[in-house]
Length: 565
Image (cartoon, rainbow, N blue to C red):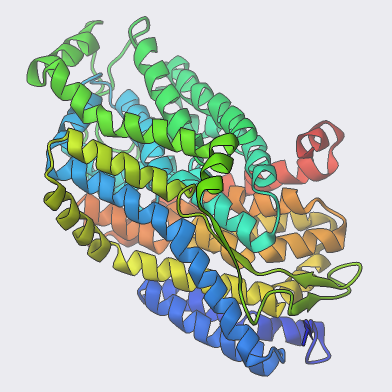
C-alpha cells in the first residue's frame, strides 16, 4: 500500500511547520544550548522525528522505521567507511613518526609568520580537510602553529577562519555525497555548482586570513604570496569539482597551492619578516607580541636547508609517501570508467523492502504524484572508502608495519571513531526520515514565503546548520531536501539552492561549538572558548552574507546566471 505524504496535517501551514521543525530544534538545541554530545543529540533528534512523522504527519510506523534504517545504512557506507579508513591512515603515520617529519618539512620553509600561516592553516589545513575532515584539520594545524610559537588565540582563531572554503569538499567529498543522497540531485551537478560558487571565496579567504592576523598593512606587504596561494587553490577547485567530481577537490587544490607557494618563495621574498605571533590588536589576549623586524633575504632558504639536515631526503619521501598513495588511489577510484569496471565485478543493489516505491510525493511539492525509490547500493569495491583502505594497507606495509600490527591499529581506530560513526549513522537516519516523511517539504513550503530574497536566506540557513551541528555533511542532510523543495516552489534552480546550502554552510564551520572545542584543546587553551567564539563570529557571519549575495546574483543577475548552467 502506497502512503501519500501530508504537508499540512494541522490545517495551518505555519503550525504544521513548527511541528515539522521539532526534530531539528531538538537536535540543534541539545548541541548548541544543552552542551550535549553529538551522538546523544542526534539520537534524541531521531526519536523526536519518529514521533512527529508517525503521530503528527500520519506516516505508517513501519515506513518510518525503514526510512531511518535506509539512512543509517547510507551513513555506514559510503560515508562512515570513508571516515574510518582515513583516520586509520592518519593513525599509521602518527605511530611510526612520519607525521612529525611531515610537520617539520612544512614549518621550516619560512620564518615570516604570515606566510607560515598561509602554508599551514590554509594550504596544509585544506589538505587535511579534503583527506579527513571532521575536525582533523583544525586539530592538526592549530597544534603545529602552537609548536611554532603562535599565541593560543591566533593559532585557534586563525585556523578556524582558514578552515572554511575547503569544507564543502571535506573528507573526500562527503558533504556533497550526502547532499546528493538526500536531495536525489545528480552528484556531478552538485559538485560542479558548488565549484562555481566557492572559488571566489577560496581566493578571498587567504587575504581575509592575513588581514585578521596582521592588519590591512601587514596583508598588503605580502599580497603577491597571498594571491599565489589563493589563485592556485581556486583554479584547481573549479576544475576538479566540475570535471572529475567531489572526491579529490581539496586534496588536489591544496597540493597545487602548497607547491605553488613554495616555488614562488624561491623567486620572491617579503621586504620585512613578520615575527609577531599575536593577533594585531589582541596582544593583551594573546600574550606579549614580538616586533616586526628586518631580516636579510634568503633566510627562508637557510631554514629550508636546515630541514634537510634534520631529515634526509629518504625520510622526507617516506613521510609524504602515504599521502601520495592516497591521492593516486582515490583519484583512480573517482574515474567513472574505473567505477563501472569494478562494479561489474561486484555490486549489490538492494531494494529496501517496506519502503521502496511505497512513499508518494504529491502536490504542491511536485507537479504530479511521484513514488520515492529506496534502493541501497552496496558498492563495496568501488566505494571511495575502499580505495582509502587499500592506500592505508599499502602505506602501512611500506612503513614496515607487520600485518598483525595493522590489524591491531585498525581495531583501535574503530574504537577511536566509534562515536563519530554513530553520530553519522543517526544524522543520516534523521535526514532520510525527514525526506520520506515529507517534514522537510513542509518547512520548505514555509521558507518559500521569503520570496525573491530566498537565495540569501537559503544560504544563511546552511550557515546556521553548520554553526549548530558542526558539520557541513549534517547540515546538508538536514536541510538539503528543504532547499530543493523551496527552490522548486519559487521557480529557482534546485541545484543552485542545494549547493548554496553547502557553500553557505562552510562559513559556519568556524563558529560551531565542536570546532571551537577542538581548537582550544589543540592549543591547550582550555576555558577560553568564549574568547575564540567572540573573535571568529564576525568573520563567520560576514563571509556567509557575502556568499548569500553571490548566490542571489547567480539566481537573478544576467552575467551570473550563466554560472548556474
